[in-house]
Image 1 (cartoon, rainbow, N blue to C red):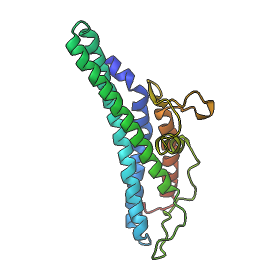
Image 2 (image 1 turned 90 degrees about the vertical axis):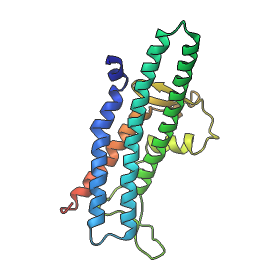
Image 3 (image 1 turned 120 degrees about the vertical axis):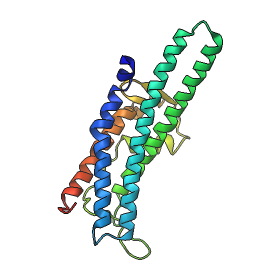
Image 4 (image 1 turned 45 degrees about the vertical axis):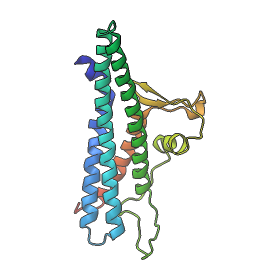
Length: 213
């Protein structure tokens, strides 16, 4: 049990300290926009999408947490059955499967987090019926951060050279950019923490501007 706790210590902190409060803020903001008399149909749709994408980010991190636990258990079994080649081969396949799932989920997190960023950063674009898409109460944009950079450079554009992903206990999945210091990735947990803190600050500020929310 001690190993299971340690392997997710940083991720647990990220989920509890930032992601869950961000989920609550997203829900409160969505309800506020929905109930605001002056909100346009587009603003209500965007706020719902914002809330949905934040929830998906939380679910993804929880799934990664479970994969980390599963991997520890499989490693324990692999050591236990080191002289049984059949079980060893099966466990090795499960470990590879978990690693692939973790990568798929990490890429999904970056994609959903990027969508949240784009929604919050929506400018005064106009729809066909001339109603504004800009969400109420949000007066500043995200600065360009690591979530956007990793999604843009390494996920959206796979032609960019790199060496895949590697797992760190304290940083989560890190994209190996091939040794270029300018492209060094801080890791999923750190990138997600920075992104979630910014999103939470922006949404809480927007909620404070509307006393009825």
